[in-house]
Length: 184
Ligand SMILES: Cc1ncc(COP(=O)(O)O)c(C=O)c1O
Image (tube, rainbow, N blue to C red; front, side, top):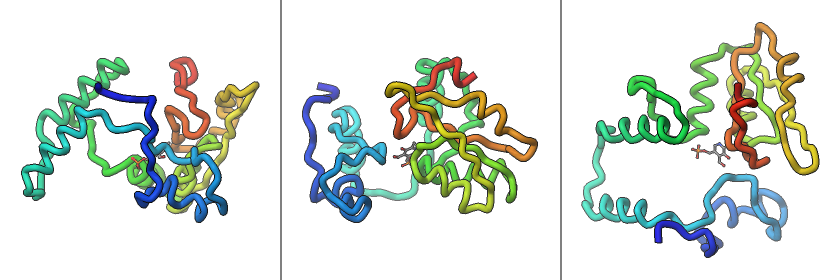
């Protein structure tokens, strides 16, 4: 079987932030921790098999990113998202949170305004504020359990000083995948 979304995997006692730090994070342990997009389902076997194969080599020295790293990503983005990406546009980051911080440093200057749309994953706030940029909040709107962007207020918020907006897509925590219309 490639994946199994039926069987929960107990994670308590594995030093995982999501479950083992509930008391420290929320002051109580009897909650369902939905703040972090951390997978609860077992990793599919085609991934664990590749990892086992790599671990089995027993030498973990410096590696470079082979051609397949780029061609696989380019094919995936084209097939899944109809997005044609050139190899030299791709830049490695060890995670999305480091990439958010680096993007703020690369594409904005101190004193610029950056928009985020709360409620959103907490590191989106610090990726702006830690670098002396102004944070402008354009809150999402909830109607009968369905969340949308407030596009009118977003348009009004943008000034000459606004140099970046950070989108969460699919959005944590509201669970929306933004439509092509909304993104346009
Ligand atoms: C919206 C969002 N972005 C980024 C991350 C973390 O990404 P990474 O571990 O690649 O830095 C999370 C984790 O919960 C998230 O919810």
